[in-house]
Image (cartoon, rainbow, N blue to C red; front, side):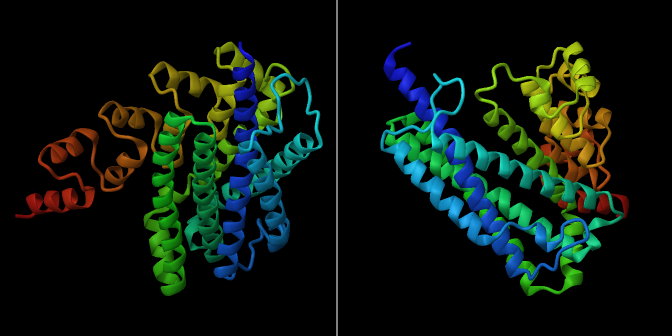
Length: 344
């Protein structure tokens, strides 16, 4: 490999870690701002003292922004040639990443514990936490896309710049949704908000699992100098790792299935059905849909997010497809037409 390619790999590695950090910190800042705006009082599982100080997050944003600028100016802070982090900057970056992982783990655990409660959407302080967590993820993704676009432009990576532009537009729309949720929570009474969250609960119930997916991203970055990535690095126990190995699922992939609470046997079954992405399989369980039923919807061309709207209204895949063929793609409209036919 040429020296130029080696240098580019160092830039890509440096940007992937530092941009991830900077974007995550900006997401955390949005998280804090939303909680402040909604006057979050804390919950038993996630008290106020768990929240990182705003000044600490702002300091981390400034530090990583300086590093990003240096990377874009031709000074990578990581190298693929190293066997361990060799500079102060690289050591600080990995420490910041490890601290970020711990905060994400606390937040994902708190969210998942709350989800086990009966009718969790009736816990009003928890709804504030959910709204803030939704904002954290959307702002993080938006800022990551911005940083990726700037890196691509600085290094004349035109295809990557185009891809990041498309990702950025998509994430900007989701940031708007996050902002609208906060506005609605400020302008409507508590009963209306609880009704809103109850109806759209499936959209929010996946948040802890999305956080755990990002923790797996961090695990891989934290171990860039640890040699072969093994199951322990993916936070999988020694006992369970043997099962994953028996099914031929490597740790880099197993960690993502584990993020959705899917074990090795279930993961292997989904993979045998042609479902390679853990989130696609995991969402069925989160939405309360059995694997067999989820597979029927997938085979009919429905993603979990598409299907759940039909499932909530008691449609099966074939019935939903018939309405779509008639030009009625909105499940609520289809349910209204069905009711009219039943009661002429």
